[in-house]
Length: 309
Image (cartoon, rainbow, N blue to C red; front, side, top):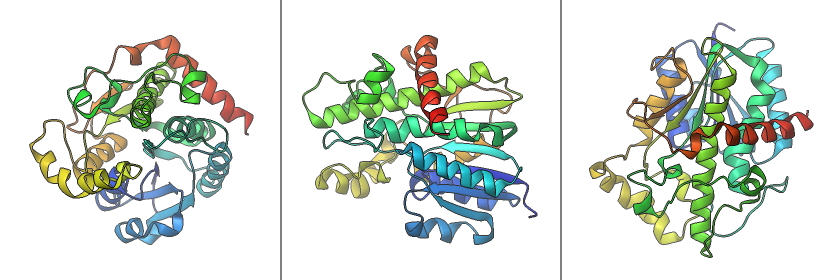
């Protein structure tokens, strides 16, 4: 196979993940893109934007540790000793309609956005090439001080303990929608904590870890669990209004920036970064820098991943 750069993406059938795949296909002629998707049969837009001879779509549900294990095995078999140049851990959901749990018994937002991705890296760490980049998708919602958090009723991520986070016990609200927002913000906090923890354990010349904030992006599938009126506004009204909001972006803009970070065109010699869609490093919450909690999260999740090998 003549290609020399292999990139692995989750959450690439829509939104910024789709734009990452399309950017790589257009801008990196030697790239080959491996995508994990819950429904590969429905990834028609992705197939239209990435040449078939440079794309492999495999079934993956990041909320299932068994699915992650099977997917990782398929990726390993496909690579056959070749190495990944980049891994984008981008799949994500936001649930505001009540308590939902994964097949493994964990709160579904955490299982999908965090646990499955840490497990995926654990399974494929030996498939990462020298100086490969691992990007976790974050969000300003994790930080109670973020300018766009409170206006949208996000009050920051919380981390009482990893067992509480995994069980969804991070909110003191009785409102189901608020519970969902608190759990989502916490999942994004965890993604940042993962990037920071891994950066402490891997030198920059070995692997690079980046937490990426794509900004406020109306029009994506993130609101699919919202009531019908909110879904309509998110898809059809807010994308136009977002042009006037400081801190808002588009899937195209954020996807292009994520892709540039993934290939090392932006900040190539640094690791342990929190970067927004503008390409600038930005601060993260005080809690995200708690190394004890970072290690608690990562060690617990890695232990579950190892147990499924």
